[in-house]
Length: 138
Image (cartoon, rainbow, N blue to C red; front, top):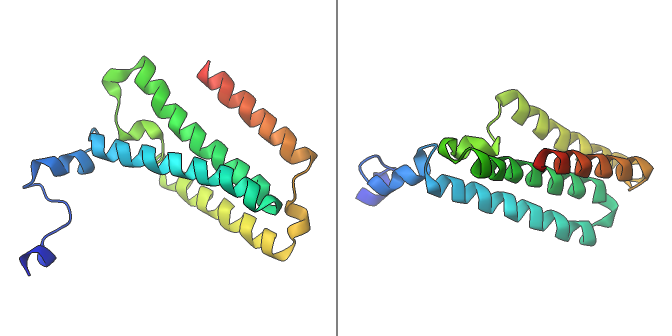
C-alpha cells in the first residue's frame, strides 16, 4: 500500500534526479529515444500510408531537427548540454501551434484526402527543409 501512495519520482531517491533535472541523463536518453522512435515510425509510415506521405515526411524532418539541435550543442558547447538543447520545450506557443498543425492536417486529410497527396509543393518543401537542415548542421 505504501508503494501506491508514493510518487513515481522522488527527491529522496538520488537516481530520480536523472529524470527530473534538466541536466539529467535519463531525461535526455528518454527524449532521444522518443525522437528516434518518431523518426523511425515516420519513415515506416511513409511506406505504409503513402497517401499521407507529406505528414510523415514532416514528422521525420521535425524529429531530425530536434535531434540535430541537441547533437550540435553536444559537439560545439558540451559544457551547456542539457534537455533544453532538444528545443522540445521551446515555448508553450510553439507546442500549441505544432499540435494545431497536426490537427489541421488530419482534419483536412479526413475531409479532402485528394488535397493532401504528394505533389510538386511537397517535393519543394522537403528539398528546402533538407537544405535548411544541412546548412544548419554544416
